[in-house]
Image 1: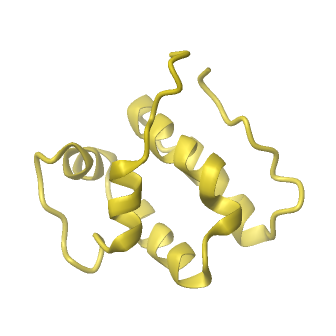
Image 2: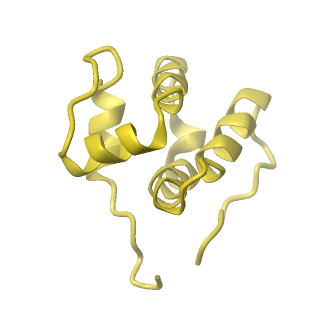
Length: 96
């Protein structure tokens, strides 16, 4: 599985854009990490969490990936509760 499994039907425009951006990062690793998280969680995120996700998506892929695997620290305004959820989210379902 290398792409979204979630339809954007029923999502508001903001969530549709974020779902697309999570699956089209530029590096496959970040597509899988953020895309799978977005597939599972985008419909349930609060407005504040959506804003936090938008902020995270502004980070360059190499920096964000390094922060997720623990090799780099990002500024505190980027690494809130949603970032911790993304880091803890299982990125594989055993079908990779």
